[in-house]
Length: 208
Image 1 (cartoon, one colour):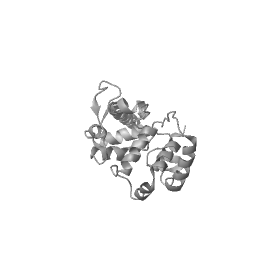
Image 2 (cartoon, helix red, strand yellow; image 1 turned 90 degrees about the vertical axis):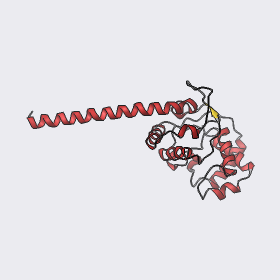
Image 3 (cartoon, helix red, strand yellow; image 1 turned 135 degrees about the horizontal axis):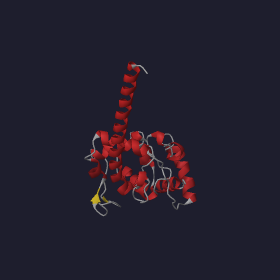
Image 4 (cartoon, helix red, strand yellow; image 1 turned 90 degrees about the horizontal axis):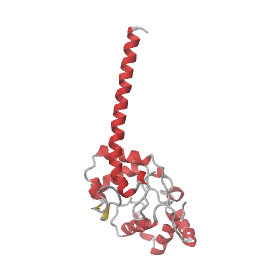
């Protein structure tokens, strides 16, 4: 091996070593960040609490935007409690959680959770209402929430298989004008009657 080749090899090796250190540091940082998320949302965002959304498997853009909105307190932040970890039982809310996250932190958390699987829970639902809900969804919601809201690539969250009690609270916030929504969603939301919402929730809960 020539001196020139040896020098190149050493530089390349140093570059790879440096890259591995950066990658290792990123992994350590993001693991610490998502550990806090797991205390409510479960490991890898697979929530086992019916009032806490499953967030593993959402798209990175959607997660990034959601955390940014919470950080700015532009979305309702109902009080809750840590479900596990050293802070179990302590009061918190999403605005409190997001306020100290930097833009880089938010991006890391979003990318990490987007790489996980959306784990649907087993839920009881009314088949007749689910059938009606599918008709309402196909007519009014499918353009933005494709295939029952099962595609993360829509960047609109995932409704198919999401916890039904959580969805019920979100519909309440939308109907009350407390949770911001895109302009084209508002007139469709305003037309929904309580029975329509109940049907939609049963439809989304029917996904296994």
